Image (cartoon, one colour):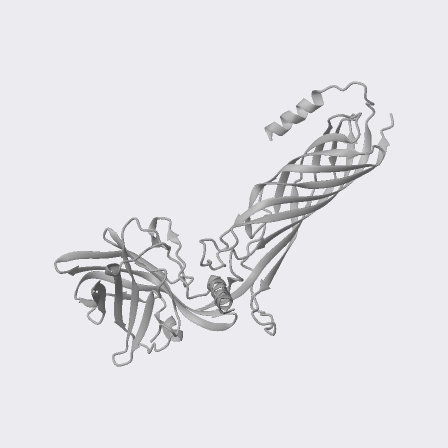
Length: 249
Length: 210
């Protein structure tokens, strides 16, 4: 956090010459996709597989797709900050490391224990957050225009959906109604991804931005109840910027 | 054509062997002592105990146990079959000389009839004092052939069924899972032998319940 503040102070102290300094507003619509590494978590409800010590696929990739609407305020042509609203949908899976199925412990009833064979568990969550981002345009007179962006998006979990795919050896076998998903842990309610991005802006009045996000670090909590998510990820974001409004004196 | 058919069958057998089933042994090392399996209640078909400087543990490629109901005297016999492993052994990669084979049998009386694995739940929570005169303990070791010796001088010992479950998979009865602990201190030929910190997690199907 201290490094972030220091970077902002450094950027604010830099003077720029030969540029229009009238502040103005712009509005952004952005689509982003981030990926991050995950590793198995002992859920306590999946039986270990034979061929390795772990109870599911050791490593997997989780993803987060987000949609943002953010007003952006340009202090100068080079430096701006943005905030707004971001809706993110995260996704992670739990699959066997090898073989076709896992034994899922659904419930215990006295002396009886019920396992179900499953192919996978898929988890999708929706987070709503308020991004706070700072952008620094590196070279304003060139097209396309390179820039860097630093941001954080404190987000709250709205909902999580779980889909357990049963294993059926025969097509005629009907679905089981006994799988109890209550024991599957949920993702954390609050997360705060912190990220750095670098990209290019095409155009000026109506602009398109393409950027690569790296690193994408999820702080504050885990976005998956199924897997231990590696903090470090990366991704891609596309932004459409429109409606530049100059501030009237 | 024949070679191709044999190759296809071998490949099919290999892939079918990769598919997990409940009869396989799954060894998860105890973090406090990697020579022993973790205490679990999943039916991982493992057992282990310290045997002085050695380990008496299940062998990953063999069915580690059997149970037999003796209707004549209403006793139940639990037999755990494994090997005596050195301190530095690595589970799963063992080559076991025949001389290291060992099995432990404990026969104890039951108040109720337990003539099938579905009725093993009656043992849930039961602790059996191995010094009781109604309990019989025998150990088999390899000496050209497996020879069974009854242990007559038991100084202390207990077999505890901490949890017994009836397991259903996809709503169909599959097996009983017996999980618990055991330890025995006995004397044989003037030598004191400790089997300590023993634990077992075994799946009992109708194939191994007699």
